[in-house]
Length: 522
Image (cartoon, rainbow, N blue to C red):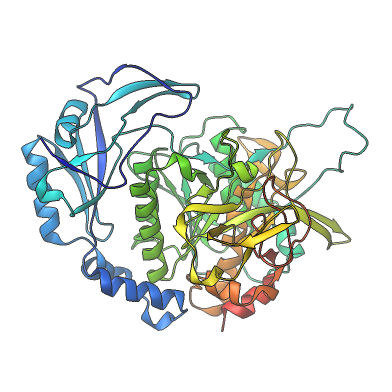
């Protein structure tokens, strides 16, 4: 019986869930094992070079596995462990430090010293566990995370479909409008271009797209539609549900916003199950995709840090560090439930993975335009039930060097930022000033910070094409030159208020496209 608890693997029951019995011992599923990195000190130096903006020290995809992947000897040790418990090795990926094992609930329970139960939750039934995972001596210190034993839904899409407003709406209700992605790009002064030669990777945890809808949508906006390809991760697939209010809306919003702004780029959509294992595997597959080599990854799914295990958050953060060393920018939506991120405990929470210091956290605004020019821009906050931009202070990640000296503002009070602050940047996200998109044959208006991640991805694709090299990890450069963004100084997201300079609602602000292009092309 394994006896070494895996640090950070502790799970708790989902709030509102109750155990209803034992998991079927014969149920077969897959688990992702994340192994330690070889040459960790050399890797830290490579990450430091990325933070410093040294593009000459980027790692090639072809070299990453041998330099910073899993040690082949550790993979052999894991194979021996798997054979002992009758587990099947499904996949080995040295560069991703991932070995995927297949087995039954009974086999995994014995291998990791756990009990798997079935839980009922308002969102459905899931297989889960409580407490830590245990490792045998030979894997202690070798395995950093074990993901997939629990298949609860790990993340939610950060979109808001605008509902029709009734005739009885108050006279004080702001007027609704909507924009195409190309109009928003023009309002923000994006540099001319179409993202030639770039690839944007998009992570999706459900739903799908219909090629006919994309052809119709792009045919009205751009001369040539981008190429869109689906990649299956952990048996995920492009599977439209027919419900524009569901995950299809997320998938189509992501593709249509990024693709309209960068139509000459290729769009690769990585579909995976909505579990901690599926989410991470989709990200690491995109980061280490030697065929498509995305230079930007857009993520519009997430959840409160309180819903994650620390082993998972660390594994995601390390995946984003790997992206930085390869010259890949990762844009992540900061959430749509204000400063609580939908947690009903009376406290503020931030969304993960936006809270990773190696992600570009993307918050939301309400964007008002007159005669093609921005007339006003404030924090997106539609009040109770209407959605608001996520943002706040991480409870897990330390204060990064490039955020030192910043303050968090709550009402009229300000205090030194103690840990990683979210978001970094922002853009139009209010459904009342949302994006015209086509989903399952229906023309709808969608907002949410889900629109902001692909908005920035499209901007970066244009910039990368102009510069002839990927911008890579850009957070320190943006914080060093905040004048490249439109500072948002009005509004709040519940617990935090906008203020001069960075704030925990809209970060540094919305993009001045050409100014950012100039900054990142240096």
